[in-house]
Length: 439
View 1 (tube, rainbow, N blue to C red):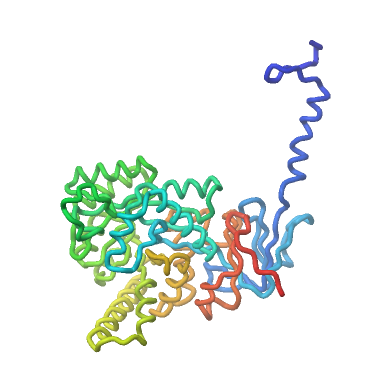
View 2 (cartoon, rainbow, N blue to C red):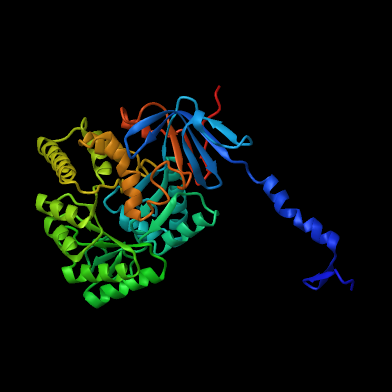
């Protein structure tokens, strides 16, 4: 062998071969996708609640390099320009309360039938479909708060999206959820059917609860979901507290379903990180949430949308009064939370085919119940990112963050419903949904 020959995997390599290999980085660089410049008539600064006119975003790879007026950009000459014309640019939206594995029928026995008739493989495919339409609706990140009886399918979906073999938003998953024995779906199943699947991991007692948390974390949970109540308070403060202790050891957060004042009180005493729904919250509890930094995810959209659809239905006077009372309670709870300064994150809580992919209905519902549009958008961007602990990476159009971008027609601060008709979606620098070609 010559003095200058080398050996690579058992084969000799001379200096000419080495010289050719040295050109590979330059060849790869030349073939790499060029940086992107997205331009539009306006861009919403979600922190300030104001627009930047004739705006542009310079994207390098998966992240944002620069944001500002198009005339002031420092993008290189080889940049690929995507001009969205008169559109409005916003950060990719965040839904903090999704159930992507859920496509239950709306009938009274829909949940039970779903558990009884759908395989885990089919449930995973349903989740993949829901993830795709959620992303195409402009929601580039979601906090999925349990798999609704599909085991750890949400972990598989999250990982498949991360590996690029499924299309969907960035996900944090809560896996199975934790509820008191007999106090979560399905209800009314014959006791003779031992081993019938349940919608959550049922526990009783502190050590049983501790084991459930550890199992779920071991199988890939990013957060833990616990039920403090159902029709009435269920788990004790000690049982919820052990959930918090085990999760916090691993730097994970706890999302708590709570709709009764006592259940919310137990959850707050145990130290949960967010109250999901919170319909029965008191003003004193809201003050405590403010002091502790506990988030509220009110999930008003599914119910409010249903109420709006039924306004012209043939209802009895009693049914109409009950409906109006429920809306009044939702409105008052939300207004009290806003007045108390509680951190509010947006979550739609879709559980069936009509809701999946319509996450932006939560935003219009929050606005209809009295939340100012800039705060509604922050609930679906900055606040959602903070709740997920991803505020350094998502939630705003700022240098250094992922290039998660959506575009809509019109002015979402004037018409929040424009967010229900997203025209352009980019996730991490990859175009997911382009504008249709003009005809």
